Image (cartoon, rainbow, N blue to C red; front, side):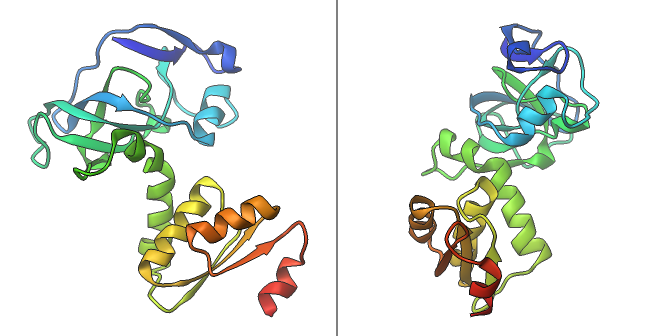
Amino acid sequence: MKAAFIQQTGPAQSIQYGELPAPEITESQVLVRVRAVSVNPIDLYIRSGAVAADLPSPYVIGSDLAGTVEAVGAKVTQFKVGDRVWGVQQSSAGHQGTFSELCAVDAQWMHAIPKDVRDEDAAAIALVGITAHLGIVREARLQAGETIFVHGGTGGVGSAVVQMAKAIGARVIATAGGEEKVKRCRDLGADVVIDYHASDVASELQA
């Protein structure tokens, strides 16, 4: 299969593109025919070595993916061949990444793609969407009518938090740097946006 991989951590020039053996799945994994991927800051940190991780060599880079199930392990019951799935490969735990034609992923990390969602959109929201959801739903247990402050409302996770919080029915106060990003925050649904380049955030929050 074709894949983007590194032999050792380093700069972007360390990335190679070529043939690697197709992965074999365990009884708890699914084999995904990858249709779309996206890039996150953590991918850059792992590839460069800035974040220490136990990586195989060669190591296929990337975390996010969307695609179609090609095979399922003996203990997998929630998916079948042909299902469209999206998710995040836990590559920092020693698994291969997602920038390859085929990827073996633990079924617990995969989710079904709704019929009206494109593979590209599912892959783009994967890591930031999961992070945002775990933070505001599982941990903060955000409820309709509550107020949430998002410091950096146009970043990857921040923009996901703004949209999810509004979908829940919360009041969103966000920060952004500059007029363009302030407008973007409002377009995403933020009720109040503080330009941290032009205002004192603490005093604006008090107001």
